[in-house]
Structures are given as structure tokens and as C-alpha cells.
Image (cartoon, rainbow, N blue to C red; front, side):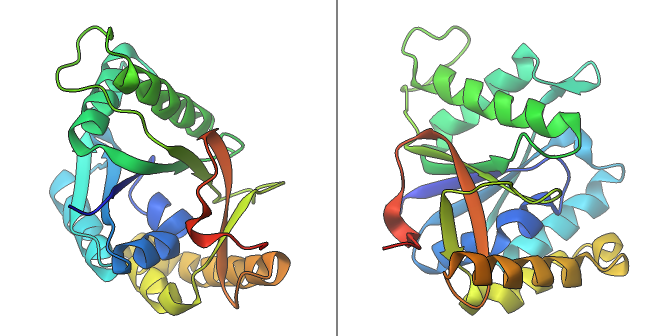
Length: 219
């Protein structure tokens, strides 16, 4: 059975912009990758889900989860933590990617805290309200959107997947219409030059767990 990876975003398109190239590379390498968004993030749920599924297919990903991460209009409630922890126990991911807490939207910090708390709960045999076997995630990475990460500890060469990343972003008409595809292309080119990982790269901080050397850039 292939190792699993989950990536959490706030609104559809976040993951594709922030770490879509990395996920495409990992999916091609045989990892089972799943995208996770709050079920409340879509103003038009049916249309939004179709766009997210189309974007996932561009990256070679077959799994998109919309789960109740929010309650009372915000993120980081108990129900959201339990929903994420249940998904972690069910999917048993080796790695998780989520938004950096330095993002401009305060909900980004809340999401990264929620995911870290859910990881702790999923690994705790005594956690209340959780069924299934406890599971410990190996590494929690954070990805950048805006502003860029001030520092990073991990970089991935996404040059072979750059076209698929852009195609995934263009699956969301709003993002393509606002030029986010070209913005992300420019950021990836800059990150490639700074990290020396490749022509195009994505960079990450490590929020929890041990360093995952699958695509180390400074050997």
C-alpha cells in the first residue's frame, strides 16, 4: 500500500498554489495524496467541488476531502479538530502540508494550529471522541502563498510538474482571471534560484516532526 500524504487549505486553490507542484511530484512517485478543505469554504458547493476535483486530476491526485473544520463562523473549534483528527486516523498520512501561520489571513494561523492539534489528538490513545487506531504523522510542513515565507527549511524541485501546477490553478476560473497562475510561476522561478533546487521550486517550513529528506535541496 502506498504511503499517504494530506494537504490542508482554507479555500480551494490554496493547496494547488502553495504546494501543488510538490504534491504532483510525490503523486507521480507513488504516494497517495489527498487534498483537504473546510466544507464551508465553497459559496457554490457543487461547482466548487467540481473545480477542486479537476485541479486534483491535473496534479495526478484522486482524492479531495471537504470536512467540517469550522464552527460558529471560525476555525479551531473542537468539532474541527476532531474532524481533522478522524481523517488523519482514517488516512494515516506520513506527511501533512498546511498553510503557514505567517499568512495575512488570521484564519491561516488558525488552520495551522488546528492541524497541529489534530495531529496530537490522532496520536493520543486516550483522546476522547475519536475511534480507530491512534496514528502519529511523521512531519508537518507549512507552505507559502502571500506573503512568502521569511525563512524555509525544505525545498522541492518542481520543474517537471510546473505545467501541471499551472493547469491546476487554471481549473479555478477566478484564480486564472486574476493572474494567479503567472504569479505562482514567478514565485516558483524565484524559489528555484534562491534554493538552487531546480529551475522551479516550492519551499516549506517544518512545523512538527522530523525532517523528511525525500527531496532535500542542500545535500
